[in-house]
Length: 73
Picture 1 (tube, one colour):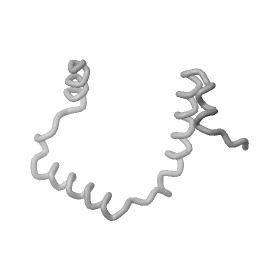
Picture 2 (cartoon, helix red, strand yellow; picture 1 turned 90 degrees about the vertical axis):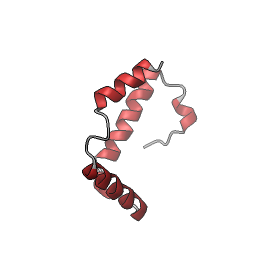
Picture 3 (tube, rainbow, N blue to C red; picture 1 turned 30 degrees about the vertical axis):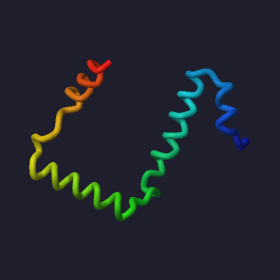
């Protein structure tokens, strides 16, 4: 396989670059089990899960967050 640089990708069209990113992401997602969480990552996840369990209504549904973001333009 020929190696390409980030500079090489600038010669691609935007749809080709988007496809490249999707292809790269698919290779990462297919090996997700190989990604190891650090102890800090695990601690943060546990803290956020505990906060959710203490007050599950504190957050906002994705639809509301998206709407706020769209209206912020």
